[in-house]
Length: 142
Image (cartoon, rainbow, N blue to C red; front, side, top):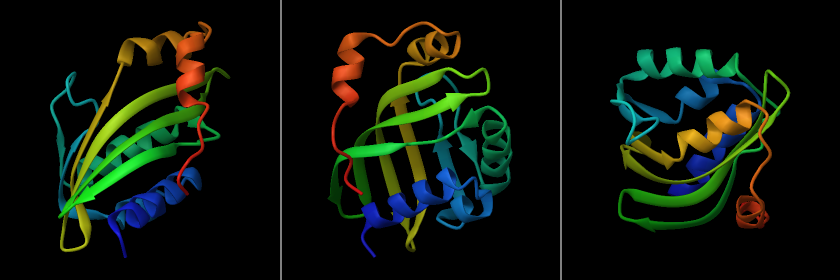
């Protein structure tokens, strides 16, 4: 299975709120930079589970989409939008780029780059900027 198909499988599990399904795509020794520039990485599936459980309480109607990707060896580079409705009822659309690394067919490294300030503004109910709306109005890959 290609790396993009594995990531799309993980996304499908997350949309279904299936935390065990999400974790099934991750290596036991996952290093997850959830907010690569803002916070230190989570290391291991136990910590990944804790983050997923916390996030699942804050997000509804996940429509996470991938627009473009490139695979090189054991790396997958992606551009997309992490999109969901917050528990406060606000649409949050966070354009992002990410690097996904694989070992033994599982995700061993995940680095996600996005603007946390924009995410927090949308969670607070501020309107989405038009240039962001235009950027994410694209067809997803799968």
